[in-house]
Length: 256
Image 1: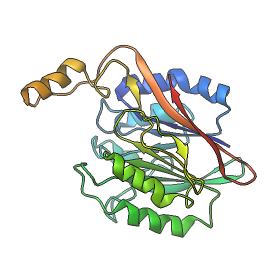
Image 2: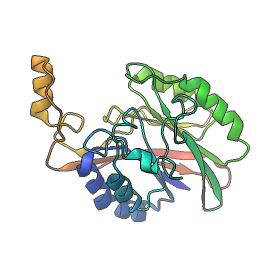
Image 3: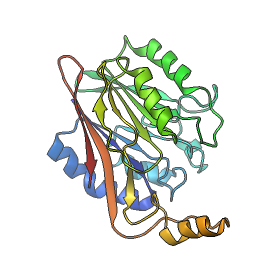
Image 4: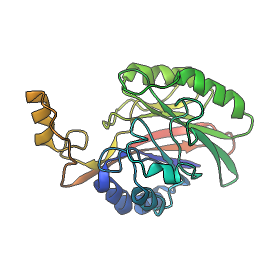
């Protein structure tokens, strides 16, 4: 079983890069299951119905979200779609779901979406307590558990990796848009990487226009961010799982 997890799509540029790359990667790498983080697909903030349909049209299995989940009101039209996840540690009773179980090639795969609390301006429940409750509830019902931890702080992500080591199949970080080079299989068998990166404009400041970004830092004035233009990059990871034991054989970065 090979699972492909694709880093945050940045605007239409990221969605178009997904359209351009995914079919080829899926064929060349023999990918079985695909997860995409779509919370920046609506020009950097949220997801629209059009973005959602465009991503699903690429035969994506799951779309995860993050701190910009509610950035576009469109989402309330399709928040209950079975392939869409928002962070599970949003306040109880919020619409949508934070995890779901999917069937793929005789395997039951649970995908869990979480959001961090360190340096993220979103009020949320404790992700460690939330994920512990979810894993305890579903671990006997599934073969594979994948966690997308949408968080800012490196330390919080690393702590989550060790917290879940041996309890889930993989923990990967999203949100910072910079792919880290620390992919590994932890001591108890869980695949881990701090951030899988982004899919969007290559010559940019985490996907945003360089001049506008510099002006914000130089002047401290509220310059409006806009998506950069030009060539795009495609960041992802591939998790290779043994079909007999459900243990991780390899975790590998993709940077195109």
